Length: 130
Length: 172
Image (cartoon, rainbow over the protein chains, first blue to last red):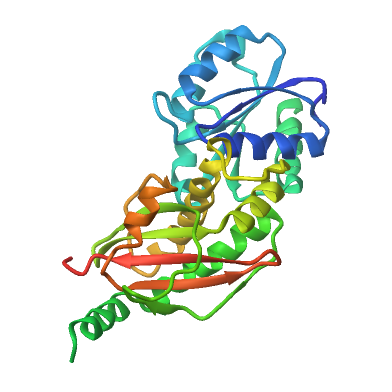
């Protein structure tokens, strides 16, 4: 599993969903978080926070979407290996292919329990370690 | 036959079980999974202008647009039920509905809409993507002055009842 001391960047335009994700991450064992409400702000937060070791980002957001943010992350050599998990609605699953092409590591469909998120993070960590 | 009765028949024709059941299943799944809230669905009924409304203090609303019709769906809560669900979802206890907690009504409906949309696509209802809004106060009262018959689906939780309401634009 990931180092629980790592900082997780949680990106969603809905305050409630950012809180839901952080609540689940706390139950899993994480305790350090930074957050952003869109892809543009997330890019700024990522560059200001050197300890970010995992990104969990929504897809549909104003200004810059989760996909825009992912593409920007993957185009910067510093973040090529940064674990990136997409948070998506069931109706947007067709779009996941596009995210995979852009370099996403995993995705989780809303609604989710902490156990479901933990399983996705374990899968992501194993994939990264392989 | 009165105009109201005709409108009810039009609504019932446009919204059969094929359309309603995915929203009922999605509501139960979303609340159980994301908010750890047990609930049961009651029998859907048609509400007319003049019927006594259940107390609604906050609602998430999304437009419903597909080839067959246009309308909107709302998830309507009183503050006690809403704040209990919010506490289960987020882990924060609040005594009243403030700006900090309001977007949860939109997010709950957004996830329900996403699940139902996928199922409905397989039944030939292709809903357009839509963004939720949250209604409180005066905007909520305006919605309740609608003369169009509304399909109401009640859901019972330990804390009380909340409703899914579907309004169909009969001109489309």
